[in-house]
Image 1 (cartoon, rainbow, N blue to C red):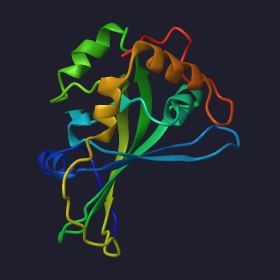
Image 2: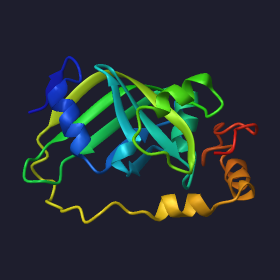
Image 3: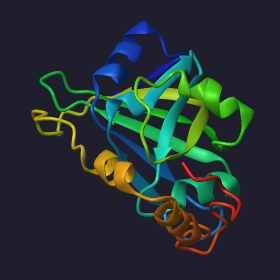
Image 4: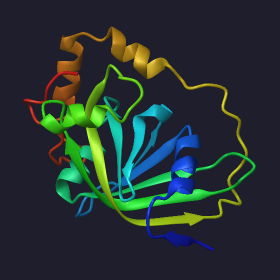
Length: 186
């Protein structure tokens, strides 16, 4: 049975901190496609306080999360344990995008251990519901290591390459506004 928590306490913070992968889900207000994105690099997620979390949004294959947040703000983050202790934790809330040229961006970066070369934003989430589930059917997996490919790719990317990524991320796959043309290069 699912349990609902009044806040992100120390036990939940510890569970979140142990997870090497998390999943972010968003959807547009009208029609369109639901987006579900796996996120890696465990140092890209931070619990800011009992009802606020944030993650470092790295350039990737699309801009769905940002477009959906601009549309309606709805977001769910899921952590799933793959160890012997089964558990799924979902954080439901309202998210907002903090760009690298926003004053708040630098303050938020202090919550992340490493600086990643392809950071295009920080997503801040006001958590409204915190609930877990058993996860009894989730298989066991052992983490070998974090995959360094995205960081290595971004470290070698030129400003021209990032400008191209911004250009391809101006709209979501459903045509919603994504990044703005004046979005700063990482």
